[in-house]
Length: 150
Image (cartoon, rainbow, N blue to C red; front, side, top):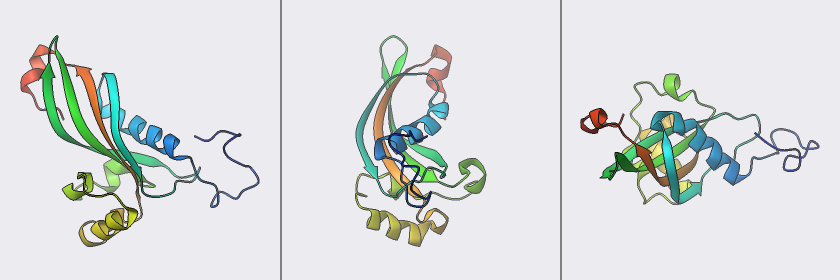
């Protein structure tokens, strides 16, 4: 995940951090499996909330805000994706209600995220590393137009 020119081997693992753009790329990569075939992607906003070290793992959870059908069996999906460090999303968060406020445009600062999670979802406190608002265009078959996205 890190490159020798970016990660100094003289630092201990606790002191080194992964650069923000790589954290966002890692988050979107973790989330892309659920989005199937993405033909085009636009990042509208992104925000980094926590540091990520070279030995941290990052998973992702996405919230779909809107699905707009396009021509030629395409659809544009507007979604918000959060990166979660050191958490096996599929198993650790099974049955855990994730606050929808986490995906809102109102959260801009690390302190706001921390306060929200302390009250509503303590298991995620200090684990949300980033939030990315994006739009993707993907192909969709005629049969799945009447089915929910996920």
